[in-house]
Image (cartoon, rainbow, N blue to C red; front, side, top):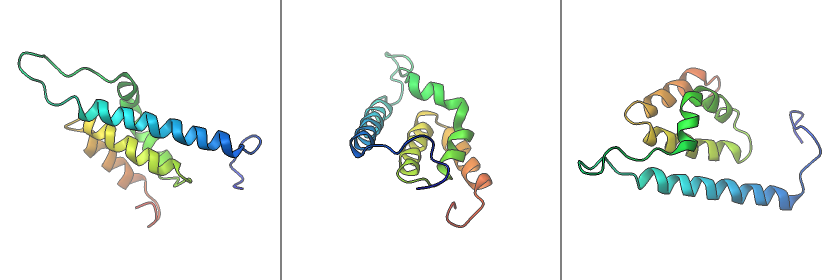
Length: 110
């Protein structure tokens, strides 16, 4: 086990439950982001997604965590960054890519 682990080891059922919960959250966010579409003239602006709104100021920290390449976490974080990039158009993708490239220190991270 890595030395950065905090607390007692997790029971497999807890780990699987957490994995399932994160997958469901990402699936729901994907539906919300891609179901928003562009603003139709009669409908006004697309509805905000509060979870992603709260993450918008933390793109750099999310990129730092993603570059740690820990277990399944970095796959979830890549998905989350992708959804945040689409949600935060037109500048969200460029901002995330900038941080990922600027903060990467190894070929694996790139």
